[in-house]
Image (cartoon, rainbow, N blue to C red; front, side, top):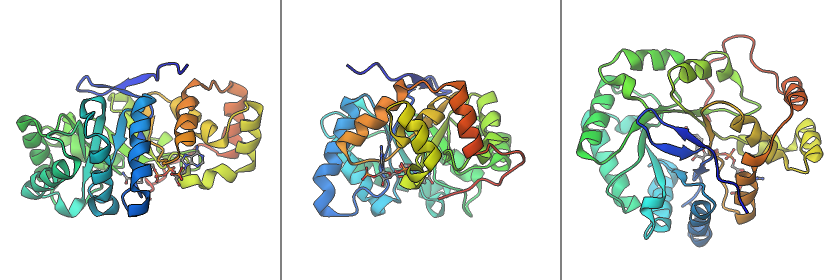
Length: 281
Ligand SMILES: NC(=O)c1ccc[n+]([C@@H]2O[C@H](COP(=O)([O-])OP(=O)(O)OC[C@H]3O[C@@H](n4cnc5c(N)ncnc54)[C@H](OP(=O)(O)O)[C@@H]3O)[C@@H](O)[C@H]2O)c1
């Protein structure tokens, strides 16, 4: 029996499970479509209801997979998509959202993110996001790949403080945000979605991670996820198409890492002692 997944509450009041499903690389290959649709459905059944996609992924292909998976169960998901920076003018954002909604087969997104900063004025993007919210096409909005100076600029704008989330690269081998960005967001009750939480698999060969995992009869991926899940208002969104790995990743919420083992992780993956510019993948 699975224990319920703890939740994180967004500034707008929506509660979401503290682990989500990433979908980058889904929708690239027709022969994998069925397995990908199954994985998204299985995630919902396991309580991993936050599904992260983007217009960029497989040029809309990932949104089509998610749309197919949610066809008869849209209301069970907390659906997140993203607008590309070069589409993020006022009109461009509204049009990109309409295209995403069409591919996803839904009339609303739970959360819509600016994928990263581009050449369009942030004020125009925010105004479009607020317009989409007022029309009911999105329920909330946020940003991605915003470092602290971007967040500060955003918060100076009219309605900028309505930002619900910042989605950034965060895992054991990329701990830079712990120096400033993570506490900044936490102080303002803005959850951080941790993308590439197992560093796209590269973390899993680390000898110390393997060693610690063995002591819990867990996997390195579970320890990497448990490390993030221990942080306040951090939502890792690992991507997997494997049904076994979905269960494995979900079970990471039940792991309790001891202080001693957190200290070991700090030695193997030192936290930052100074500002590290935000990294992106
Ligand atoms: N906002 C942004 O700029 C941005 C950038 C990157 C990613 N993202 C989002 O974050 C999500 C996650 O990041 P990511 O896809 O880059 O990397 P990730 O989740 O760290 O790693 C995904 C890779 O790890 C494998 N994997 C998953 N669980 C595993 C497990 N328990 N054991 C072993 N291998 C496992 C997956 O393979 P299988 O599928 O074969 O299991 C896949 O190859 C993306 O899918 C996307 O939604 C956002």
